[in-house]
Image 1 (tube, rainbow, N blue to C red):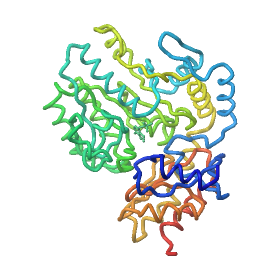
Image 2: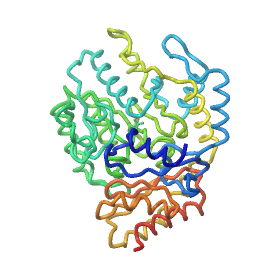
Image 3: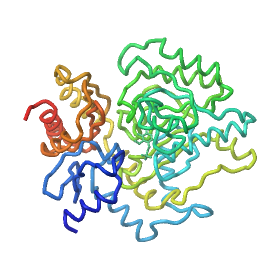
Image 4: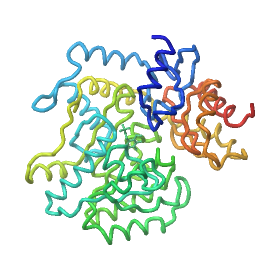
Length: 427
Ligand code: PMP
């Protein structure tokens, strides 16, 4: 196909994420990706700052992951999971259980992060139903959060600033508390937990679960909050029979410096959602993991089964790649690598805090955020990032990066230099 054919079909018939169908920005054509680089059809080599939205932790075109995919294809790409099982699912489950908290023992596989969140919310409601508490059907969450684009996941995203405000009248109404003013690394302000405690005290008979992105709120504002909020929240949830649901879809698999961000707060969620990096960014895949108590509670009560079962549940190809990806992560010195990226991001990004146009700079693990005072103009800034050899996709005022863990010191310097040139030099 010629470039103009691709762009014509794209422009006329394909819908991109959060995009207009009648006035879309022209996308860049990527023909290949390798390591930390994306290659455009025009021969431009871009350092990837996004890990394709948190997922490509080992870089693109990894020989081990490629090999896992090819090997699995020789036996089967897919088989239904109803009534059948297979070694890739068992092997992945073994490797997943080895890295998540030990009390989480039952895994439900699905095809995307949003679905993993839907599954978690359904689990919580079905569990309380089984416990004779059928009025517990709502959720409490922190403002500024993001949990996906499907229906109930949308209902727990930030109700005003979130991308889903348009649907607010049509969505189930949930309980929202202000996000903690105490940021990660600052002093804990005990007032931060008060609205949460009051809301739980007043409405616990209706609340099935507390869903949260531990420590790092991602697409809702790239906000890093104090671990003590989660410790206090866990205590309150226990008191009021509210399940803790950790959405680690963005933060999981080392991104914040710990294997899972819950570890920063030493909390033990009842349900954990993982996705994105689970396959090293090779395939859309996710898992919702719960305790034996929840799984058994649901299974011992009528109808005796958990009411969910996607067509591509535990897809063998995805399982084989995910198993290899987790193996690759665990056999690497990932903790040291993330700590090195973190230190480098601190020293490279913090000088930008003194720029006139910058409101804040923050770093945790392999995540770096430059918050601007004004929203960036995507139409003009996106081509300039590309011109400067980097792939960065800001939203609103937030210019942020979470590069593949394999990025070298020099590549990270180049990535940040490309960002600085784009943001801070006049043309
Ligand atoms: N939860 C969080 C914290 C996320 O960041 C995302 C994706 N950005 C989702 C859920 C939804 O995942 P998916 O896009 O795979 O449906």
